[in-house]
Length: 177
Image 1 (spheres, rainbow, N blue to C red):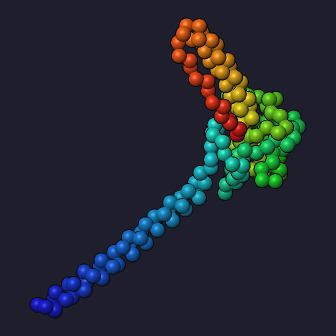
Image 2: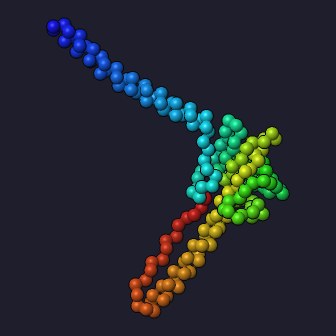
Image 3: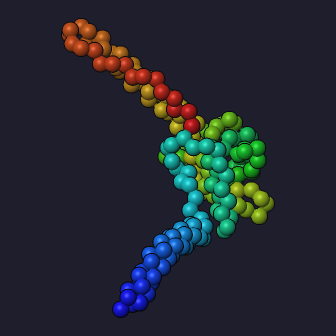
């Protein structure tokens, strides 16, 4: 009978030692499977984000491209040169849609920061599907901030005349893309 308890105890001990190793292996396998799934889908960042992101260039396995915070270096009719990490890419914007909504290709200027979604073409350039002009967004935001500040200053004048507590002025923040 003692022998059965010894064997059962030994099996239980081995089981308790091996189980965490198997669980960790299973967890690692699942993490690897998730990574492979992401690579197969090649989920790229959204170019329509209003957030500020570091300069990046992504090229997927089927030629899909994302340029994040690239800088417009030159403009020639329906093609722009965009620099990202020292690499200059020719981007065809002829059939692209522009963001913010209602923007036109004619609003792009040399020095603007842009996000671009598109596909690689046979010439080694990019055919853009979406161009998000981050610099234009900053200009619109700055303009709105100035208008809001003027309204608050006018409100403060009226509050002062009425003997009411003053609305605090907004604190300046950076909106640089």
